[in-house]
Amino acid sequence: MPRCDLAIVGGGTAGLVAAFGAAGLGARVVLCERRAETGGDCLWTGCVPSKSLLAAAELAHRMRTAGSVGLEPTEPAVDFQRVMAHVHGARERIAPHDSIARLRREGVEVVRGSARFVGPDRIAVDGHELRFRSALIATGSEPVVPALEGLSEAEPLTNESVWDLEHQPRRLLVLGGGPLGCELGQAFARLGSRVTLVDQAPDLLGREEPEARALLAERLAEEGVELRLGAEAVRVEERGGERSLVIRRAGAEERLPFDRILVATGRRPVSSGLGLETVGVETDLHGAVKVDDTLRTTARGIFAGGDVTPTLPFTHVAGQHGRLVVANALFHARQRFRADAVPWVTFTDPEVARVGLTEAQARERFGDRVAVERRSYDELDRAITAGRAYGFAKLVAGPRGRLVGATVAAPAGGEAIAELAARIESGGKLADVSRSVHAYPTFAEGPARAADEHLRARFFNDRVRRVTRPALALLRALERSP
Image (cartoon, rainbow, N blue to C red; front, side, top):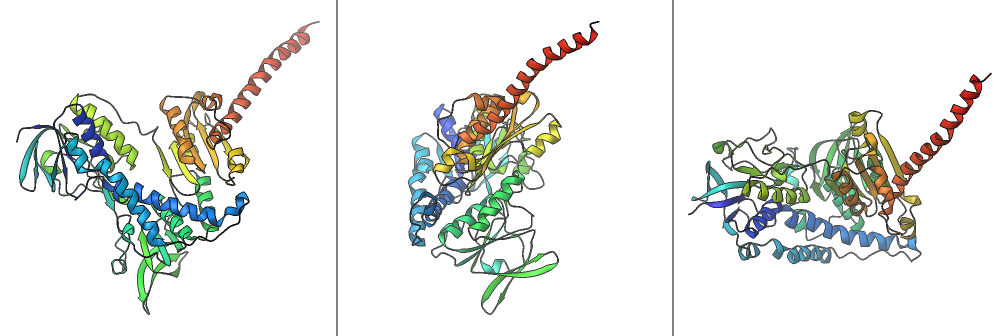
């Protein structure tokens, strides 16, 4: 087989973006995928099915709380099989965009099977070898199921298997208070399951601002989700045909009965069995492939992107990785990945959207040269008119007023964060957010109204200085006069 320009191992987001991009430029591209379909976690077990489920759950919640906009509340009749048909239908509608058929139409050669590096420029796929000039490792990640006594007998669900449910669990226990646990926990509760969420950490969403964590915990509790935070999962046991998770908090044990248990305790990179040691590709203690900021690994000509690397584990990051690899692998460019301007969103209600530094991180880095502005959405006109007046926008600025971080924990927070990410990317200032004209009334006004306070305070202080400095000078002159 003649040598290809780019060999890609893995058909998720990073691999697909790189494959389409490189083939579109005329490169000879071979993509190796061990699964039956391309599309990766995002299409089949992540973003697409979860957001489809969340859409049904949100509508059910809006029907139940229609009184917030003057309508008669009604309890929705939830047909779980129809909801799951919607989830599966969304996947099927999007799948052709990521399909093997489309890859081949675009000029990508797709090889089905498990790939392994066998030399500096060679990959073997089920015994057949191909040679490459450059390669991309894009094998993604997989859910971690803790080695908890009795858990395997309970047939735990993960983000990969929960979409195969045919019947809605009456009692769902969610193990993990990160983004996945919070999103699916809220969704199943809104659809009618009794949900208990357990996490060893004292707060949900431990990476986010403290007030965002508190707000989400309050909202989940209001919607009937039972929270057991700061709780150690001890074991799963069965008594009289009923399974329970035994937890320990403050030295005391508690039994939490459930019908199904969903494990959302994290993910790990898929890097074993690839022959990385054969070609000198190093991994860290967690199995993530080590890369520099140009996504080059420790082996010449081999790159890595997406969840298999230790960078941010988001689909949009994987897509950006794929684009960078095309430039860096084919044209020997040195384009670099910047993590400081990458936004992310937890799609709960309220959405928790974040980019850049938290207030605590900014103060640790810049000390007292930090400005923080906050706007509550209970004062935002668009939120009031929509009957969704809750949440906040928080902007964090560093030296000279440069925007270094933002959190929008509010309805449509994921939409509003895009502008703030662009400001950070371009080195913009907090005041710039205020100066831009925003359509009225919109949820995106929230961050702008927070920035207004910064601009107002700055102008007020400037005006005071302009007035007081000449006056003080005059007084001092009078004091010196005879």
